[in-house]
Length: 392
Image (cartoon, rainbow, N blue to C red; front, side, top):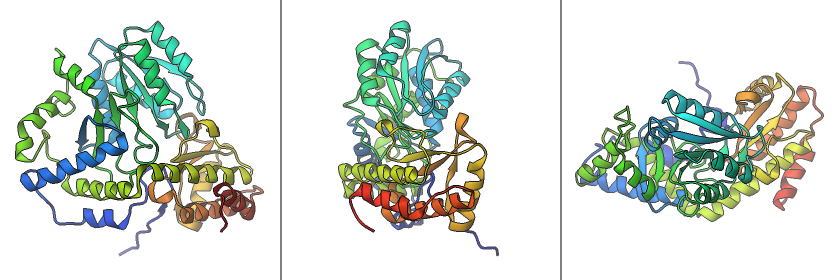
């Protein structure tokens, strides 16, 4: 039997997984119903609220996060309705694709990759499109490493429209400060396999009471049974007593792994965890600059979980191959307009730590020299440790 190599996952999902999470997923299968399972499921839902900063309903959708995004659009925008999507990267563009596949009318307000849509621009767009039912933004744009000001966006939406506010927080959930209730977010999509350091297979979603009321009062049907939040709401009301508050089967092993990942997150403390991610990301960006490279996102709006590095056209593929071959480190290529000119590095969950980042910096410096750059490992590591205010 051939040996299967397990690379070090320095990508923006999936992330490295703690041993306790892997142990949880290897336990004997449990039925996805019954009193014992129902107690476990409710415990996980309560734990999942905390990284969201939500006191509302939490759903655990047994599907990829793209399905949860589609669920949001399908339920919150009528068939003859409109949504406004804030775009400054590939992932925002994908939400537009999802909405148009559903037959919804889409308007956009856009900024260049690496920049943010200014709150004043969003305000103007809302005043020009007063009939939009939903505004959609990304918290951390995975394709650019930009942290969008969703707190401010939420305030602008509330003050200038009657629209609901939906946020894709897939690459920030568990690694960056997120406050669904406080920021006026009505539908927020997280992720189990990124900064939480769990396993993919379920997607946590926070739904506000306002969104629940609109879903309950609506007169039209979603053209998909599985994605219909009314179906999910009815199942919660009808079957919670049976220990299965959902309309379909769910992967119990993945939920148990999510519970263990959440325990690790909450035991660390959210504020402490967010600060760790922020400091490690800032130090890594300093190391990147010390190697003579630039990041797509300016420090002012940089994500704490992803750094996207600019490279000459065509070089990302060579760099990624060399890093994997020589150091067993997996990096990710760019997305959308940046596909051939950037490389993406994830520092989330376990990998937002000194040992992972020092090894990655070392590998990057060596590989860049092999590719013709004048990148010095010592200078890069000095900048990294200097930013942290510590020594090797």
